[in-house]
Length: 181
Image (cartoon, rainbow, N blue to C red; front, side):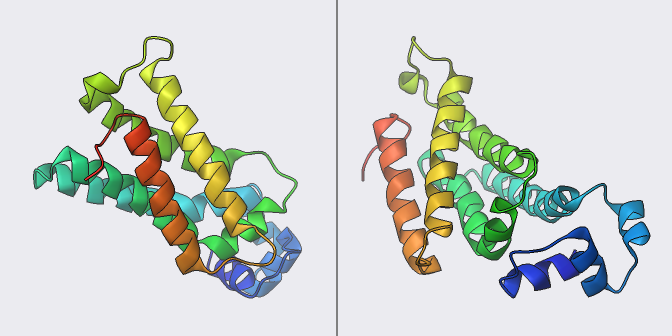
């Protein structure tokens, strides 16, 4: 996994099992004893981050952080982690693989939106379930932030963070999940 991080940070677009194994100093056979494919490596890198963020969210609940602060903080934590992984995102986006990594991130983001929707009854819309609403918000946010990360020429991370914060604030306000302060 460290080899994957190094290759991604170097801007390598052509990462293969062979190049990754070579960078890690192992054989292809050794690679396949630990991972089924490159996407398995990527999800193995992302899963611990999502777990850590979940723990931070739980700590906010335990500390009784108000929903209006806790909800956006949870969403932005995840998006910041996604932005911090921009090198990896750029590499993965060029692979001809399934959407397991994207699904993992969108699901984690949707769960955060869903928690907000569940706690704000006035945000419910009879034409759309809370789950569908949360997936819609998460998917749209993911696609938008991904497009900023993958933009050519490259957009600086700080600008992506600023755009992301503005987008999330607007989505949460328009969805009735938080009021503009």
